[in-house]
Every structure is written in C-alpha cells, then in structure tokens.
Image (cartoon, rainbow, N blue to C red):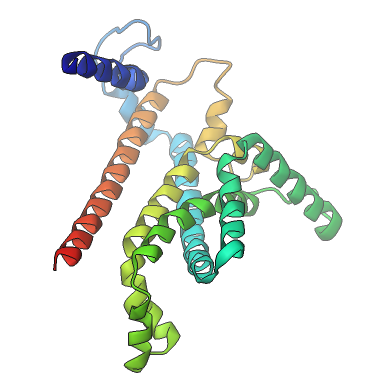
Length: 270
C-alpha cells in the first residue's frame, strides 16, 4: 500500500511539473519547435539578455510587482492590526469582506476595476487616457491586500496582548510600542505576505489586461499577443528563469516560516 502511495505521489508531481520540464528542455533547444529537439544551445539565453524589448517588459513587471507589494504590505499590515483590535460580529464581517476578493473571479475584478477607472477618468478627470501604470498599481494593490492581511493575522493572534501594555508601562508611546515590540513579532508574517504579493503581481494577467495601456505593458500581457503565433524561443528561457526565481522565493518564504515556528516552540518549551 505504501509503495502504491509513493507511485501515485510520483505520478501526481510528474503531471504537475511536466510542463515546466518541457519548457526547461525547450529553452536549450536549437530549434523553434518544442516537439523536436534539434540540438543543445545557449543562444536562447544570449538572445534574451541582448533583447532590450524583452528585458524592458520583464523590468516593467518587476517594478510593478515591487511597488504593489510594498504598498499592499504597508496597507495590509495596518489593516490587520485594525481588524485584530475589533471584536465580535464586526470583526467576522470585516474578515468576510476581506476574503471575498480571493474567491471572486479575476475577470469580474478586472472588468469592475476597468469600469471604475473609466468612470473616474471621464466623469471626474475629463480624460479617456486614465489607464496606465497608476491603474495597474491600484489594481494590483487591491487584489494583493487580502494575502497580506491573511499572512499577518495569524501572527497577531499568536502575539501576547500584554506585551504592548508592558511596553507602555515602561514608558513607550503606542507608536514606539508598535515598532519596538509588536512589529518584530509580526515580521515573519509581513515578509511572507510581501513575498506572496510580489509573486501574485508578477504572475497576474487577467486583471492587468483590463487596466493597462500601451504606455506601460507588463510581460504577461505582452505574451498574450503571441498566443496566435510562434513564441520566440528566448521567451522559453525567460519563463524558465522566472520559474526558478519564484521557486527560490517560495523556498525562502518556507524557511522563514519554519524558523518562526521553531522559535515559537522554543518559547513554549521555555
């Protein structure tokens, strides 16, 4: 039975990662057709790092991801502290509202944001050119906020509420107590939320497609234009590098969480 379980687990993981294996092999293929390996080459990676257009698209995605992750982390952390201070039905209601964007279809969120931006642009600002980096940033912060809040909330529940009272008794102001006492306790959750927000922003296509303009195009949106024609092989190299980048980020997040859990266990044992 155990052997059957191991075989089944192997098949499941093979199914999950088979596309990435094909992509990884294709990034070293000398030909353009993934169905036929014509020879090993590094030219796809060389073409990628010498193509200013592809690197520019990747840079746009990274800039947007970092900016949206930073804003979402700041706003989400403050929101989590405020929600944690609530009690009873109000707290449950606010958490329910926070979880709605997670289960709401992305196409609905994208269309809703696009209509909102167009309404603001035409009705308030009097312009049709409202879409751009600003609208992309607002949209990405919007769908990233719940991930940050849900990452910080467990750390708030694990934190002893008397620590803030003790800090204020020793002379700290509420703001000083937050930065010196509460923030270090929340830091693992904040970092996890920031990493999650960055990866979600870097990966997003559906919502970005409805709120972008030609003035600022992200990599996932631009790749969509290649769905009806041959994708340049250098993009296989880019996707492979992005996969390993995200994999490294996720491993880092798991390491941070594991260290935090070990610290919590040590404190309990002490």
